[in-house]
Image (cartoon, rainbow, N blue to C red; front, side, top):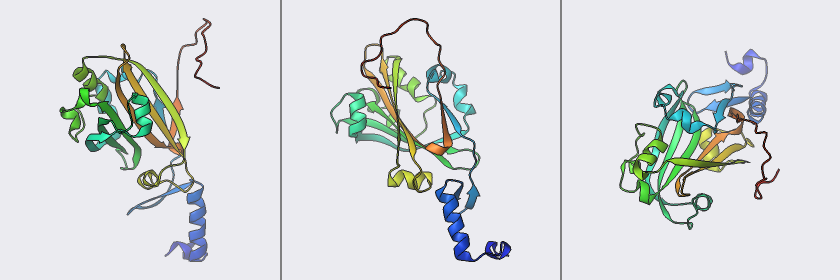
Length: 224
């Protein structure tokens, strides 16, 4: 029995109802599989203390996301990343583009990339399209001889590009969360800039920190 016959509605009415549910982000269609009610759970994203947690290699083994490197090599750095790296747009860097899929159902959950100075990653295994044996920052520390000392995250909610919308199977009008993460050494050298794009309806940002009792000077560049 067809769904339209089961619920005693015409096919055009059924398609219209499905279109409304999809536009409201309540259902999703997976190519070649079918249409499903969306899972209301959100993945938790924690930036603070990420390096301390990841220094235990076991973290890589317990992730419920499967990494796939879709490109590794040299490219001209895009303007928004060049600004974070403090280099001229078009400067050649080592780029590692990744897709992160849910291990259970294979759904693409994140589109991202890491940008590493050629002086660090050029001519190394970082230019090979394979998942590295440990956290990327540990590889960069080994290659550079420097330790990650400071990090800055810039978060932007925006509409997706056509490619992002297609890859992440987003409903029309659904925004994405785009984070640009800049990591520097103690002497101020940029060791890595990474960016990640997530569907805004599938992610929850969590930031836990100690509350200081000491007065601090506000950052002149920050705005509330």
